Every structure is written in structure tokens, then in C-alpha cells.
Amino acid sequence: MPITYLQRLVLSVISLLAGFSIAAQTSIKPKYSNSTVYTGIEVGSKGVKMSVIEIGKNAQTNGAFNILKDTSVNTDFITFSDATFAATLEGFCGFYNKALNEYKIPSKRIFTVISSGVKMQAEKDAKISWINNLIDSFKVKIKEPQRSVEVVDVLQESKLSHLGIVPESRRFSTFLIDIGSGNTKGGFFPYGTTKDFKLFQLSWGTKSTTNAAEKNCVDDKSLVNYNRQLLRVLAGAENSEIIYAVNESGAYPVSDNIAISGGIAWATASLMYPDMLDNSVIPITYADLKKFNEKLYYNFGSMAPSFIALDVKKDDREAVIKELTRVQQVFDQRALLAGTGLLLKVMRQFESTFVGKQFFLVKNGQVGWVSAYVDDHVED
Image (cartoon, rainbow, N blue to C red):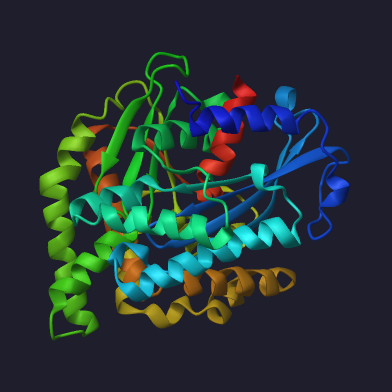
């Protein structure tokens, strides 16, 4: 039986831990004195993401991980047009060459995947051939015909994301909801071990929800009409998927905490709580998120980074403005409305069905499968 991509990854990480010197990584600043580095590049629904992660020498015992680089380019691949295909291919190859040539990371330590959200949307639109064409074109451009580019399974991605995002101390009391660009996935470990995972998934994500609302706008592209169409899309998603998925989730009574990750979680937490910029986990309530969602629509001008920064300490303002500017470069007003609207629908069902759940926004889940794979190996 051929060795799988994940098996090869685990073997590669084991070999990394044998003692590769960080000194060769001249373009990045390591945290640990003796560590190893690898890169993950993922084609997601919204674009291409690259994460460079350093593994400390004691990672197997104390989880010494450090994110050296985390960057992305928005290419909107799931619209499946010639222009977005070309932009995605350029971003994919560009990140690979940057890791290989600038960061001096060997090819065998650069891992490349297509997210489950892209696969789900491609299946919806009968566009699987676009994924295959992207993979083939990527291999040709980087001159690696034998390179593995796995299209990640949603169950695998959800399980490993839980392992990578949720702290071990809350491993078995937390239900993870990862809202991606093209889909939403997550779940929990129901039996107190990491062998069995109960999957939660929706075919809606921030970008796919935005695209559906914009498609329904037809000739009227105004914000008023967009919001009207968005509410219709979200109502349809709630009635056709969300209610059933939450009721069947099995979150009660095992899970005390509902952790929400993904780009919209990072964006929402950053905009709502700029004074907690260094906090990776932010508690939130349904009522607070609803007020924020309404503010996005009726008073988006108040979301300007320089305006928000006025309410934080003077010494923190520069960092806050920089981070909030980055947020709004990734998510415009319509994407923020779609993402928070989808999150509200999900939270509403969990709140009405399961009394006493605590909700948290996780801001550092954006590295996705990369840190998850590392965490999975460390636990083994």
C-alpha cells in the first residue's frame, strides 16, 4: 500500500526532530536555540496561506512550537474563473519558491495541500477538474512532477485542527467550530481519547456565504440589497443545515466550551476587543456579537482602525492600527457581515439548544492544518 501524505508528514517531522540546525534559516528569526523548521502551504477557498513553523528540541515533551511566518494572499479560488485560477496558481508557486529559496527550507520539508472547503465548493459546482488542473499546473511550474498535493478530507482536517487549536487541558470539554472561507467544520472527542472524533460540518463558510449573497443581488449592488440577500441566504442555511447539524452534534452534555476559530473569528475578536490584541482566546456572548453585527451594517465608519485605536492605551495604538488594517485588508464590510451573520446563526442554535455553554473566539487558529499536524505528531 502506498504511503499516505499524512504518514510521510509524520515521518518527515520525526526526521526534523533529529537535529536540523536552525542556523540555515537566514531569513527568519528563530525563538529556540536548537530547533527545526518546516512550511505548510494551503490553497483555501479565499486564497493561499503559508505558515512557517519552528519546532523546539523539546517539542515531544512540552510542545515547544513557534510560528515564524504566517501570511496569505486573497485569490478567491472558489469562484472558479480563469482570473482567480491564475492568481491562485501564482500565489501557490510564489509561496513555495519563497520557502525554498528565501527561507532555505528543503523541498521535502514544504508541505502542500488543498483545503476541504475548496473540495466541498468544487463538488457543489461540479468544478473538481479545476482542482486537478491547479495541482497539475503547480507541479509543472515548480518542476516537481512527483510532489504530493493532498486534497484534505474534512474529517481529517477537523480532527487535527482540534488537536492543534484547543489546549490539552480542555481537549475533552471543548467543541470546536472552525469557520473557513468555503465551509465550516469541527467537532469534539466524545470518549475521552483522541482516537474517536465526532464531526460537525456545514457547507457554508464566510466566502461562500458572501458569494451566494452577491450572486443574488443581480443588478442592484447596493449595500441595502446585499444585506437583504444575505439574510435570505443565511435563513436558508439555517433551515436546511444549521439547525439539524447543531441538534445532531452531540455537544450536550460533554462539551462545556464552544471554541470558534477561522479568519472571521480572528477578525471579529480583533475589531471588538482591540485592547486585548495579545490575547489569543477571547470570551464572547451571542448578545455582544449581535450588537457588533448591527454596528457593521449601520455604522461601519466606526470600524476605521485609527478611530478604534483611540480607545486603547497610547503605547498600544500603533500595533492596534497595524493589526486592524490587516483585518480590513482581508475582510471588507460585506465579508464581515457574512461571516458574523453565519456565526450568529450557529451560536443562536447552540445557545437555544444547550444552556450554559461558554463561547470563545480563537484568534491564532489561522495556521490551520500546519500546527494541527505538528500537534498530532507530538501527542503520538
